Length: 198
Image (cartoon, rainbow, N blue to C red; front, top):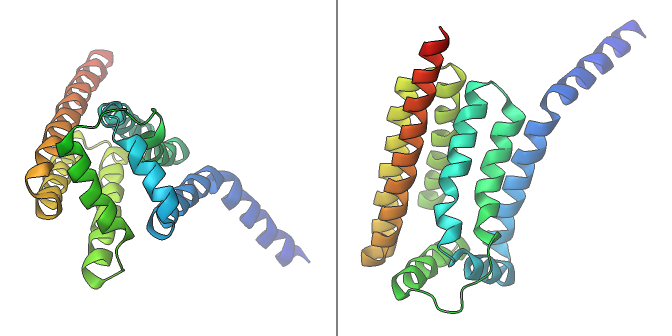
């Protein structure tokens, strides 16, 4: 009986500690599965994602992810990842869509709805690994490695976009660079503030 109680207490402690992390990770996976398997949902998702405001708001969640990783709050860091995915539908679908944006999103949607392959699984794995390593770097409070990984992720995102989006990827390049610069400025300001406190 004591052994059962000990096991139960350990499970309860684990769930209490990691419930938020598991919840937002599960919601992120669910959102991806819906995008990959439900054409109607994907069409609605990308029609709203055509609103450029949903692109420009991304730095808010990137900074939030880095900040909560620095504070070692896994729940809120995971929440930022989910909100990044969800932010695509925060704004109304625009009446007029930039042709370049429309073309790029059409290519991205085609890739998401396409069949699974070794290449696609590898790309998903690289994305997840990149997010994990970025979070881990900030969790360990290594701002240097955090910055390096941030720009590696942005570079690979741009490269991926050019491969699949061609000339239409130029729109994404501007947004990715904007996200990187804004996040970099925040990291520098955070570092200076931390040094002053010391």
